[in-house]
Amino acid sequence: MEGTFKHIGASFNAWLMNADQSGIRPILSFVNTIRKNFKGILNSIKLGITNAVAEGINSKIQTAKSRAKGFGKIDNFKSMIYFLGNNFNFEIH
Image (cartoon, rainbow, N blue to C red; front, top):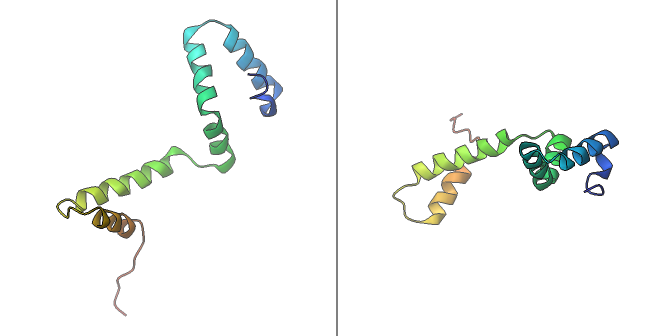
């Protein structure tokens, strides 16, 4: 475990090691969650992107799914996703 978290700071690494050795189930579960999701956690911190972006995309896809019902072809579903994912301007000049 030490090598995995080596670059994130001695204090956090020491806490993780102590938490791992605690034997307290909820803390062990938390440490395991950190291990499993470590790359995603670091990427979120580095990029400043939260799960809200993914939820927003999913919301648009669910809207497209609802609107594409009855067409029966996957291409129509894809087209609806692309249509909803863009900010088209249909104003007549």
